[in-house]
Amino acid sequence: MANPPSDPIAAIATAPGRGGIGVVRVSGPNLSGLAATLGGKAPEARAARFARFRDGSGQLLDEGLLLYFPAPHSFTGEDVIELQGHGGPVVMQMLLARCLELGARLAEPGEFTRRAFLNGKLDLAQAESVADLIEASTAAAARSAVRSLSGSFSQEVHGLVDRLIDLRMLVEATLDFPDEDVDFLVEARAFERIDAIAAELAAILERARQGSLLRSGLHVVLVGQPNVGKSSLLNRLAGEERAIVTDIAGTTRDALRETIQIEGIPLHITDTAGLRDTSDEVEKIGIARTWQEIARADVVVRLVDVRAGLTAADAAIDARLPAGVERVTVFNKVDLAGRVPERIESAGAVSLYLSAKAGHGIDLLRAELLRVAGWHRHGEDVILARERHLIALRLALDHIHAALAHRHALELMAEELRLAQEAVNEITGEFTPDDLLGVIFSRFCIGK
Image 1 (cartoon, rainbow, N blue to C red):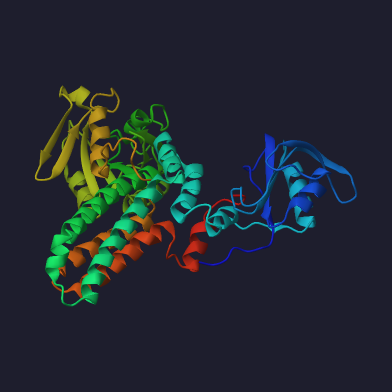
Image 2 (image 1 turned 180 degrees about the vertical axis):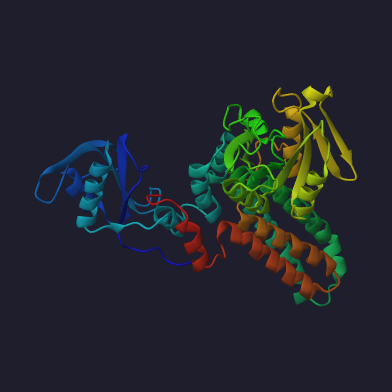
């Protein structure tokens, strides 16, 4: 792992805009002198002290609190200074400029957290959870990020690594003493332990996959002919009048997006222009954008007026839908047809009967979207995973299965167990290359 840089860095740590308080953060080695210059006197460790911040000519810039955290007892593991002043953007920029004038350089995105990782204050999974906590769009995602930041996910990963190391020692010992045979591994219950690791990896992978839904959500696109109730359904799901609803065909000309939550899962719902042949140039553009949205969808909810049933135009729409995208057919306006809400599944195809305008059967659609997403309750143990975590867990599980398949070829089994351990270790950053670290931390906000 690369050594952390030794130069001091500074950045505004609070969000852009105006606020009652703003924070400028500085991190680097031996910052007590810098803290004394900024605050006008020698700093006291881990204590908030009132200070007047002045420029190089002694002119007052702002007044507020100065906090000094000497290494290694700080977020980054280096000396850290925090200047808490008034939260105007001009004031913050002047304080930042003063720090740069005194020898700090502007921090890169995520550089504070990267230094915390390189100094052993956080592992990579915990470091990523910092960004996840900041970006959390639901309470469930925020709770999951806090658990990862506290180390719960990392502890599970380290437990897996410890068990893999024990197994590798058993297999390597058998290889080192050729007079022994597979019976030695049988007596040590090695194969049962490999099975247990496979089951544990599969369970963690499922929880991580659930957590990935908390991070990114599900992209749902409403499609259908004009006047089938797409905008009414969006309004009903959103709980407010987000889309204009009229009896005039073609009212919706462009995609309208709304994010809602169901069981803590973000659902990004897009209302689209009605699909039909038209000579209206503006409507044609809207229809073209509809197909673009469909191409990016996780789920297509195809709406049909239950009174008309499936028509040739609906069949034409269905024929153009991407083969791999999940789809749900909603027969809308059951209140006008005298039908009751219900769910019907036939040959793997799901049809829902509901009324978007009256709200009848909307819970059927909510439950169906969660089912399509593969969501089920895990309580408080969902892992807010990133795609690289899922890849690493799948790879480790594949190597474990391969190890079991080579139980009579111990050299191959040992190699598969080693590869499984490396894959798991990538989650916490034990074997993470520097170029990947650059990509990960570049996505953080500046000042964190």
